[in-house]
Amino acid sequence: MRKYARLAVVVLLALAGAGAISLFSLYRASRHVPVFYERALAVQPEAQKAAGQKFEQEALSLHNQVRQPGRWEARFTQDEINGWLAADLPVKFPQALPKGASDPRMALSAGQVQLAVRYERGATKTVVSLSGQVQLTQEPNELAVRIDGVRAGALPLPLAEFRDEIAERAAKAGVPIRWTEAEGVPVALVRLPLDPREFGGRRLVVEELRLTEGELFVAGRTELPPDAPQPAPGEPVDSGEPIRAAAPEPETRQR
Image (cartoon, one colour):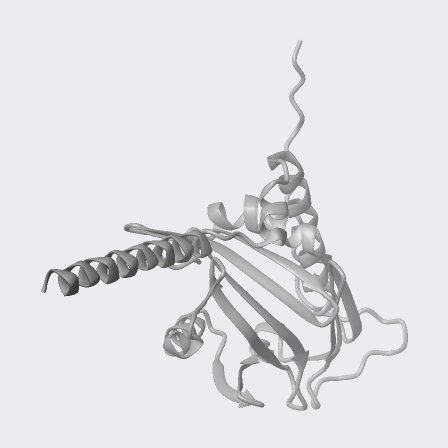
């Protein structure tokens, strides 16, 4: 009897030890931070602010371009986007992120995007990251975002549990999403919010969206309404008052 008791104790201790090792491994895995995210967080605040300002200038320039009929295009670097996410998003759109989420950053490569965000709620502290591929579909102004993986640290997360919440949040932001699959991998179909009523009846068509190493390129065209009078060659089109970037703050010098 004592022999079996000792054996049971040995087995229990072995299981307890294995469980502790597994829990420690899971804990360490949950604390894993993607390399691109570490690098993005290491950028100095001054550089983030300058990059964010450049992103806003480029975005305002694009906004004014698309109000004129014809072709338009723009390029944004991942440093500019991350600078805006770091310096401007928390101030201008403090409610944009879900509760517990902070410090979003991204990385761009050929046809692919990586996103990451800190997540802290209760005892849970981790970095949630997503990797995927982005391309235009055959439908006008529609993106297909193929989700290759979602992780908390190094631990994979089941995306199916979050699909409805993602779609609901996107709908509230005016960006409708519907879900489909390709080869068993979830794909979000995103309709770009380009309502002609917001552009004086003009129709915006995104013709190209390209991700390269560290850069996003977007191009398209703006079409006048069918019943609008066509301007003569070289004649400017009244598109309303363009939006201008705010003047930079004056520098203060120390004496």
